[in-house]
Image (cartoon, rainbow, N blue to C red; front, side, top):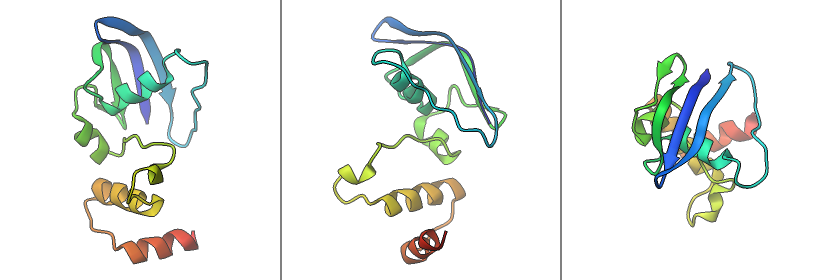
Length: 123
């Protein structure tokens, strides 16, 4: 599902990741933990395609497709996106609206908010 091979990344002319590797198979859940400054946020932002980070070498494979050079919006449409721990800190954004919008972008179909909330509550 997600495979990162020998990823080397720099930001602001500073090498920040060197030969990072991870494999997350379908159905697995992984947690990346560590003290501040060890690259946890960097890895997630690079997976997302943040333009602030320059991939020097390596690859990011998602569902057998190399997404290393895709734009952020192209990655999001494939199901990779980054949200804050609590999207409701952004005024006007509810958890259900965030999830519904993400689902709509991934599937390409309009999802009725009231039906989506009902479906969420019944799950």
